[in-house]
Length: 412
Image (cartoon, rainbow, N blue to C red; front, side, top):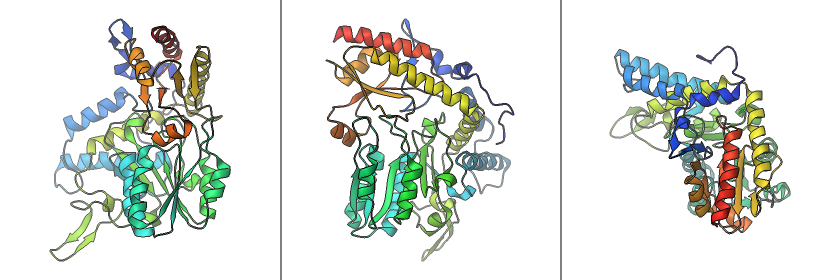
């Protein structure tokens, strides 16, 4: 990819200095940021890319006859090339810009789903899905007469694959599954799920929001039909995301949103639509966001992947060991394959209260149901406290979390 270092950066601990927000204090406490599953912090390279766009090339893309637009278009479409390489899509026009994972899933539901599903068809999701991968399918089923089915989750936070096999049948039209659980950190066996779904004649959408910052993504090797993710969980800006779709599927799908850019010709009587990817990109796009996401991917791709995975595995192992030392703390989600996410409950404390007491010590975590209310209902809990880590976290962050929880427990 253009702009990448020829030598992958292997010293992961040194990368923390690339994130200026992490240098601040909250009173007498240093910021301990453990909420990366909600949004990742941004490296200087991404901040600089956004600043450079607005300072040197701010213009609309594709059709203007001036140099600013040419430069903006080159940067914008160059970011699409970067995403294509990042997920190993076969064609650059299989990369559709969206506002995020949520819009990408809704695009598939409203375009592919409304044109393909019929009464009696089934959509298969799981109990661990984010609401963004539940509600669009519920609404689609109400419109079409299709039926929504959910794979159970085991007590340790893994998909019940035997139940998946029971639910998968000739009526299954779509399997929509998270690659990684945002609440539990569980890495799902998506390759085998896709293979089984295809054998049954079903299409597969993967919600990759939590996977892209932690795992290598190869949509061709996975044979995914659709793959959705958000830039802000990948060290990029908010308000930008990606839908990957196989060319044959995207070609056959009708436009979802209409207006400028996605048209080829308009008369008062008739409209013909633009080619891929523009058919699905109505209106002025988030140009700066796409450029920023491209910069984020280049930043991440310059890091040695084996070193990054070892660093995150070490964080997960150390964090797990420290939390297990705390009396009255219960880990929620203990799958064998996880990204560095620790969800837990502290005896005698509501998750929101625990989160507030940690915040008073400069420790930023997420508390609540994490937009996975069906999962909480399945596990019979009100919610969890979630500490989620990323490449810029270190062992000191985990020690501060450990001590913060001990202090918090003394208040409860």
